[in-house]
Length: 179
Length: 196
Image (cartoon, rainbow over all chains, first blue to last red; front, side, top):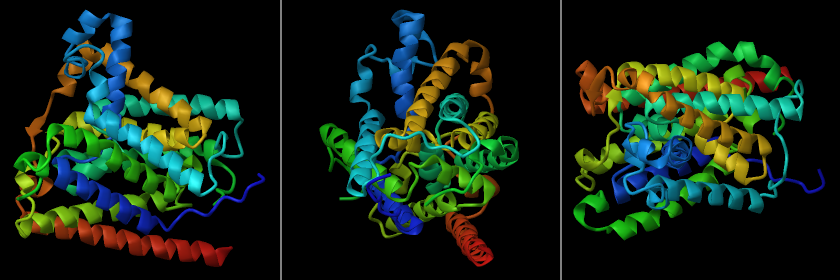
């Protein structure tokens, strides 16, 4: 580590900032923020590659994302929003001197193990977000702030199972968490 | 003119597309600023080592919830025109449970995995790839899981409506729980500081 990275900002300040962005989304476009929905649009195109476009365009799981062929995702609102998220994240890290190629992990596992477990965790989240019709952005934040009943059942189930599973995967996150 | 602007004609379809990346950039910026692109920090929430996830999430939720509630009360925003996600009790509870396990294993969620990947973290990129694979898997399995996915539908409903209390009381309840959580989090932080 050669360049000194700036410390992260106050979590409450970052939270109020995200809340203000979410509020702006309600006011401007009448909908909230999301992340997994954009993945769904892109994954529908991926599914079309596996199943064939005509089959995927007729299947209920992918049809809503493929209304005018696999090119639709380019104009999807959430895809544009998530594209912004990656740009905003990169900009923030760049200004703070945190842009660095790393594999972040606990001290108990190798980089290769971390990559594998990240993929496994991602698969479970992909499946879970589909059943829940959204993730921590689209359900927990967006639906939660609108008091959606399903969003609150998602929040409670997500954290309850996270805490229940945590002791079993303790090895992944051993060692002192820096920052 | 009342909000949402997309409904009252204040914002065209092209305008909506144009604000999407702008809102996204601000969202990604604040996620990274708060440290939510760094997986060990997020995972720390599940071991009560680092309560950033709770603090960021609930201060964001509180800001947006109170903002939208009062803008509606003041007649600036028509809340009935803001899209309320539909409720499907069983698949959302099961989905949430699956998601929670994935969250603690990956240490990132879909939005934060994009931030992590964009800032050079290869574990973030691996999580992104996993999420794609999980969704494709869901799509392929849909013929067998579709009936469960569509089950226990309640439509667009809020929890205050479901349990028969006013929206204002629901907002007050969430606010009280969040403030109680913030207070507990500060106490936990202080206890950890003094034990070091």
